[in-house]
Image 1 (cartoon, rainbow, N blue to C red):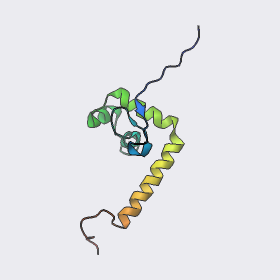
Image 2 (image 1 turned 180 degrees about the vertical axis):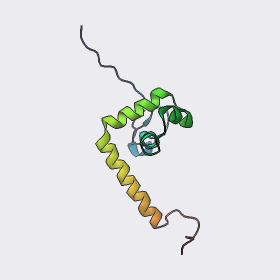
Image 3 (image 1 turned 135 degrees about the vertical axis):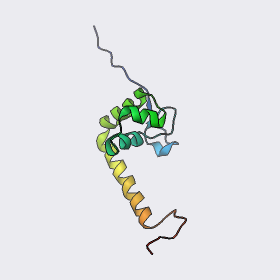
Length: 101
């Protein structure tokens, strides 16, 4: 009997949504948000599903997608984190003056 590979179509990319970064299908929630909740904040898949109003299948699909594309996603998340830190240091988007200065 021939082996059939099944795919779960719960992750999408669209150049018009979140600059093409992978998202949970039917949402604009990025896979990276799920990864950060799990790896950085230590949340359980059940808690993530509850917090983001997702199914467990969506959470696990996001995590599976991350591990399948780990090097690329880690690089993108590092770049975005670095940019966010630079903007924070420059106070870009801040409506209030710095308290320290």
